[in-house]
Length: 371
Ligand SMILES: NC(=O)c1ccc[n+]([C@@H]2O[C@H](COP(=O)([O-])OP(=O)(O)OC[C@H]3O[C@@H](n4cnc5c(N)ncnc54)[C@H](OP(=O)(O)O)[C@@H]3O)[C@@H](O)[C@H]2O)c1
Image 1 (cartoon, rainbow, N blue to C red):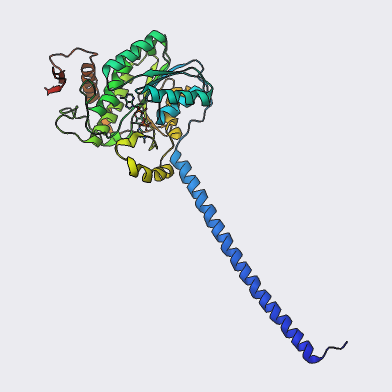
Image 2 (cartoon, rainbow, N blue to C red; image 1 turned 60 degrees about the vertical axis):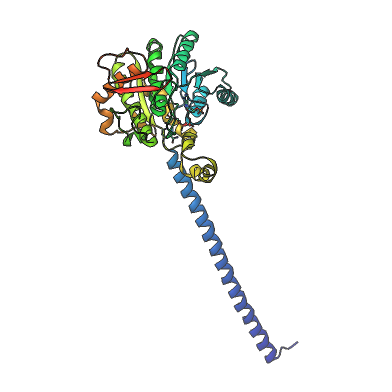
């Protein structure tokens, strides 16, 4: 059949109309695809960036696979937080772990969880309240009855920025728990550590020491109390203690190092953020703080890295040696603090030259005299 010219024109024009429409539709499709790909690209980019930031925040990790089968370990305050993750990892590697915690119920829950996760049954629940010198002495005596060796002592327990309070012996809580309790514990266990050499002590300090000052005129915060300054003072005390002790231990085969674990999502901030604020800040902390597992990495390295066997008196962060401010190298303050700590904890009798006297009056009140 013959196609008329007008029909041809009509067909041609409708063809070109279709192809214009098709062309427009194709362009639109392309635009949509471009948009979809751009959105996917942005989402992927953000996810990769978040992953890298998160990885960066988690910091240095201890990667060696060495085991510590049969090594006897004490970890203070390990029912939660960094201590619990440290206990879990050392249990995984075959250690015999003494969990030294103040709350036996919470300790037992953590102990069962660690046994369940690691299948290591050599995990023990022992009570230690660092805010009581009597409890510290009882713990050390019982441990020595049970064990003839001690390979690793990790002074992990700590409290931060709590309201003003006193330990059972009348010490301001933060200097009392973070420093004095651990000072006595370590000294009472030194003989076991020396007998088991090569052995190690790990002390958990904090970068908060940078704002810290050992207040010789008012170590016990009797005249004035600032909860942040008291924490910083106690964490500086941890470093001065580590350096002074490392010198005393030269040639014994016992090494002592301290660390900053990072900014870690744990219960440490319980006195700063609680209730509704805790629920609000928790997701933010999950994004920008280390996990407790990552926070434990530097303690684990100091406790078990074969390369650290002869290294002593240093400060670490993110699994590497970290430079410290001059205030940590003040030997005369370190010596002063050591002597005061010996007197306060009853390791040395108070002398005529005692810098500080602490007496518990008949009513149980603390009377401090600074000479
Ligand atoms: N988290 C951080 O960002 C950070 C930063 C720098 C340094 N640090 C240091 O890391 C260490 C571990 O802190 P964390 O973050 O894991 O805190 P955490 O989650 O609050 O754990 C602290 C542990 O210490 C125990 N403890 C408190 N008072 C005690 C006492 N009187 N006697 C015995 N144990 C006591 C706690 O027991 P309860 O559960 O019974 O209270 C808990 O097991 C601390 O020394 C802290 O100063 C932490």
